[in-house]
Amino acid sequence: MSQCPFHYTDYRCTDEAAIGRFVDAFPLALITSVADGRFCSSHIPLLRNPDGSLFGHVDRRNPQFEGRSAFDAHIVFMGPSSYVPPEGYRNRQLPTWNYLAVHMDARIEVIDREPEALAILERTAERLAHYGSAYRVDPQDPRVVANLPHILGLAIDPLRVEGRFKLSQDKREEDRDAALDWFIEAQGRDLRGLLDALKDFAKPDAPR
Image (cartoon, rainbow, N blue to C red; front, top):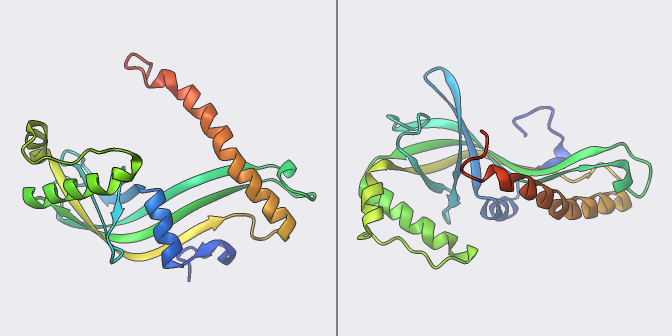
């Protein structure tokens, strides 16, 4: 059963294979937990192991992880989303917002041991090679040697996982298909505009 009573069962996915493919495609996770009585959140890429556990690494100065050995967290992997207006359907419908996400409650172990942190860095580079990079971690690289003491490894044990894939499942097939077409086309349209707007923000002297 969904951990959120309001969450529609039509949108809930517990298919492990589908969830795994989604996490592989969108590995940047939002990790939220409580530290020193306040909520903390960090955007951290997390990669899956064959058994469904995950691994990653963080800067040891990150206050969410600094000085901690293990804690519970809520993790969200967010995929594409889009506004779907009435024009996105075949028949008269009210607008909505469709989205793809995976929510996870997990136990996080913080690894403060350099050999294990180095192994995580090596595995991360290998796993991300499909993005078109030939980079591999060289333990003798002076940059790696200098940075390794500042890195903490993460080992994540998922406790509860569910996909939340809202794709107008409550509509008739022809409207559902039309909304999905709109959703797919909107990804390129919306992303191009956002990236154009962010070009100036990426400059070092941009207002912050």
